[in-house]
Image 1 (cartoon, rainbow, N blue to C red):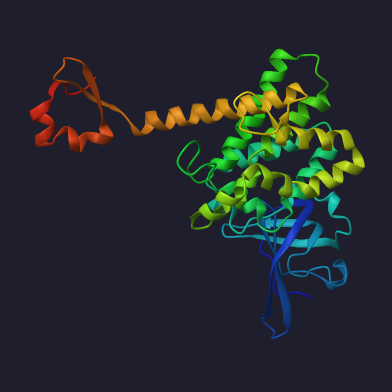
Image 2 (image 1 turned 45 degrees about the vertical axis):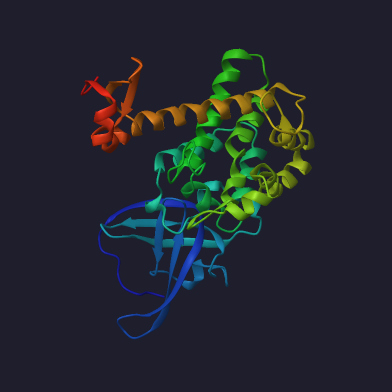
Length: 335
């Protein structure tokens, strides 16, 4: 059915998996009814209104359905129009790559670079079951959206929007770098197991935050590490069939203890140490960076006993107050 003619625009042939996010009834210029479909991947939205029914398998374009698409994409200034050659249902969601999982508004993502880096990391994994397992995990409801928008902590490290995905990607990269420098003979599957564990180690935090802020009640009752196992269960269930020892290693990494941990089973593999150390290292690094961003050297003051006091810019009001000037001697306005 035709809704109108596509203008002469730049075009390219595309194929891939998309999710149906909107079905909107419309009328053509001749008054004939038709439906316009909006398909979405992580970073691409397509409009489908100029199509023949013969190229679309029956009833596959239902809201929230994931479909395989092949056709000609016409790009304009305001939107992307797809003239499909084939639109077919996906019968096995194990085939769906993680990039095909949309979010409500990809353009509002706080850190597009970190999300693309995560996708590239997953695509580069040599052990292919990992790619399927991670996609299975992120297919759950709005988990992807929470993961890329929420912070990693309330007031500590990576406490800004998008901090969770930024921290997770950094931990996975640190794990990879440490293994490549210190364990050059480690099998690739073991290294990638540690990377996936590092990438998903804090995914449980998507449940300790809400759209309005920190969920203190849930956090008092449940530790986020326990929620990590729960959220990763679809991927672990898949890996149990493909490679049970890998699934059990991931469970062990996420629950084992190491130096400085409060509780957990004793570590049985060095992979635990790599993930835990990378987590602490990146957390401390960002926390220190946040102090540097928020506290700038404003001046030095001398206490009555002769010792020196650093006055940060965040205390500038106190620094200028009458009580402060009566008790302290300012040595410099800046350093």
